[in-house]
Length: 310
Figure (cartoon, rainbow, N blue to C red):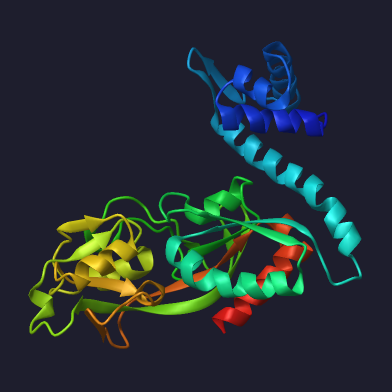
């Protein structure tokens, strides 16, 4: 197969991001015909149809989704090449560092690590995106080439995660811990968190309250425990995120089962009760691509995250 040029990779990414050839041309300063010609040439080189064309624009085929993800990751390596070369042997690095994290990790785990990172490496410019842990979740941002590193929930038990705690709909974005994540990504565990029962402060019988939940909660590593508890009802109230769940519990609207990071925002309006040694836990860790794992900025951030988690 003939190699695709950096410009051809940029065109593929632009078409996927913009949803059409004309829009991609506007992003890149090219004509619609030039974009179309480039895509056809890339498809001929790859040997697969990469985009479905239609009146509504262009959308990646399964082959196109994979090609675009790899194109973004290859282009990212072009971007960091200079910073890597200049930082070699100097224990310093500069440039943009793209991070994806779920809400409570972005709020509590990431800021102290970034504070130390930027103090040691003032040239690093973190760009943080908060991504819900549904579907591909934060790990999917790395796989798609949109993030250099993600803070994700890792499934220590293996297998795929799916379904929220208490019957919440949608699959969580957790990935296997300590091994390769989907798309041959690399993972590492940063912390293990126990779940706890949270309920209105002073309530005489919190287990009698309705259950509050949100779609990102839980995964395959807690489902078996959850199903074995005959005192836990099906969730009747769903909130947008864990912070909203905690606020609603504090208002006396129900009880919830939340992990430790989520409970860092707890106030005196709630009481927290442990679930014992057999209670569920989740593993929070980082996810990165093999090519990013060796870069100076990602390695430095992982060191700070491990220091924070420890």
